[in-house]
Length: 437
Ligand code: AMO
Image 1 (cartoon, rainbow, N blue to C red):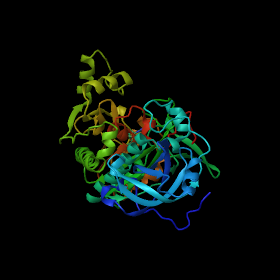
Image 2 (tube, rainbow, N blue to C red; image 1 turned 180 degrees about the vertical axis):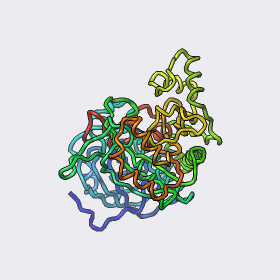
Image 3 (cartoon, rainbow, N blue to C red; image 1 turned 45 degrees about the horizontal axis):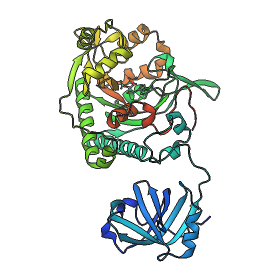
Image 4 (cartoon, helix red, strand yellow; image 1 turned 180 degrees about the horizontal axis):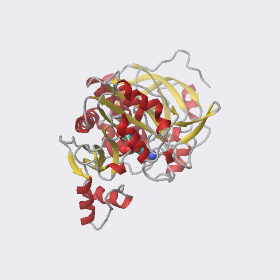
């Protein structure tokens, strides 16, 4: 096997255009395909950004290069030093005539799926060999869009004056209802993987006022569905001196900002996925929980007031409301203990869900900032206030009114890339049946 020996990339595949005609370059990548036609070998080299044609003609290259490429199999890793030639028929109008080739890793096996084929084996088969599966152009497009989505989210929050924070993912008590926690052995005690940074981000409004966090959260979901994972990336924000109305506006502007960023930064990737992203107009539509029940009732789907929206109801919303919208005025009993009930009607609360069609992307609300009420609500939900002492005691030291939201990044990615299965937009998904790779 060859060594790098000081070779460093000068260009990515897509940087080589007719303008580079005559330039000496070094390119790296994996072999997407190799074929011989009329005595010429065409080696299609692929890198993160796209593909590049390496053209090997007997009368143009040394015999050692011809010998080297003979033993190459798809997926092998090669480095090519050569000269660019503009040629209309090649991808992006340029090919490389090699002066020297290094084989950096020789592939030993063919994967059980083709990089460019339209038909693919089951997702599970592909996930078993995920890092190779990610070489497929569709996946590079999905995860490039994810990368730019995350970058845009960060940019937005920094521009709006939020501080980025990281809170511990090892916690002592549940925040989002007891059932979905993963217990861990923490030295000689029981601990849990965090379901959400909820109480920590609330606490940070005391000193930092406006914070956001992007990090993993863990939920021991009992069933395997197309939109639930055991580990997700949560985008959380929390802010002092605002309520759920302000937070809904922030979330709307964030969504608009991300979509506009993707329209310019990921044009080719969106095209490859056949996705047309329209910039949503603000303010986004809002429906109260009761209005949603009415819509469902008209469609023959009866949901009792106070209950969460079941899967068939969400399916109907997917057909009736194929756009971004909010559901507000939720029954207080259906939301977590930290959500503030409305002053004029405590049966409903200042919470919202942020939806696209049938997919819940985020939820949030105004928080309870009275210690007495928080203790009452903990008890009503069957939780022990003693377990939350570390949080409750802070209310004796001046807790500002605050509000925030938590957004599931993978759910947002499902919407932005129009994928049905959350695993398609997750690099290494975790669910009840999958702990590797
Ligand atoms: P919630 O529990 O609604 O709220 O979670 C916030 C968002 O996270 C996503 N999500 C999931 N995505 C995939 N798989 C899962 N198992 C999963 N669970 C949740 C959803 C959901 O809208 N602390 C509150 C947020 C807040 O009020 O600030 C919370 O965690 O997109």
